[in-house]
Each structure stands twice: as structure tokens, then as C-alpha cells.
Amino acid sequence: MTAFQTEYSFELPRGYVDSTGMVHKKGIMRLATAADEIIPMKDPRVQQNPSYISIILLARVITKLGDLSHIDTRVIENLFTADLAFLQDFYQKINEMDSFSMKTVCPHCGEEIEVPWSFEGE
Image 1 (tube, rainbow, N blue to C red):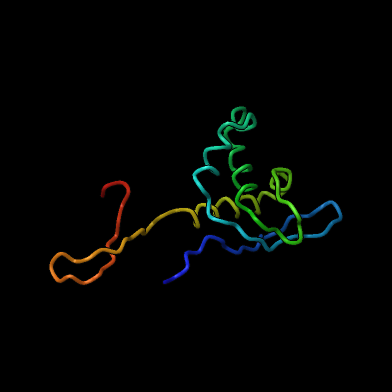
Image 2: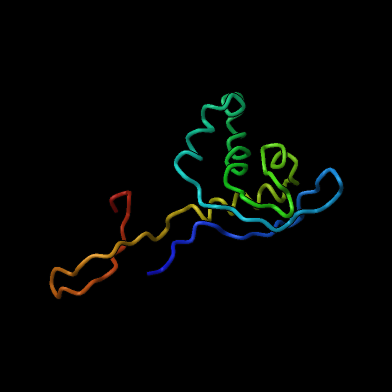
């Protein structure tokens, strides 16, 4: 049985510069949950500015960034724009489901096979 990957390593193009001047480039992002995408909708910052949702989302799903002990919205707000764009793209890549498949048994030959599955009903 293959383990399901839920965390992905990344390296920022520029890096987050903390208050001491230390640069943090390597990090880990986990897959988003339904709660990660729903809970920020209640946040007043998102209600005032819908673009802020990406800041909150990234703060929720980035589990490690360099030697930082905690990643919150202030960290994400202070990223260089190139790093923010990189992380938004990375989030999309690891969370999209281009090719979901499920195991089933062929009704004709009885062999176990993987069949592509679309949630859009295609």
C-alpha cells in the first residue's frame, strides 16, 4: 500500500527576511482541507478585501518556513511579491485534482483496474 502524500517541500525564489535579517527560503506546505478554504470566509479581513483570503490560506497550510517557530498572516503579508506569487501557484498545483482515479473490478474480466473519475460528470 502506498502512503498518501500530504506535505510538499518548496523553496522560495527570494525568501522571507525576518526581523533579525535572517532569510528563510525552504519550507513545507500541506494539502488544504475544506476548513482551510471555508473558515477564512468568516474573517473580517476577507469580508473587507476578498483578495486577503490567499494570505490566510497560506498561513494555514504552510507548516514550516526556514527556522521560524510560527507562520501567521504577518509572515505571509511580509513576503516579497515574487514569493507570494510562487506560493499561490504552488498551493494551486498541490491541491488541484487533475487526475483522480479509483480502483474497481472490471465487469468483463474480473481484474482489478484503475478508472479515471471526474467530479464534474464528464
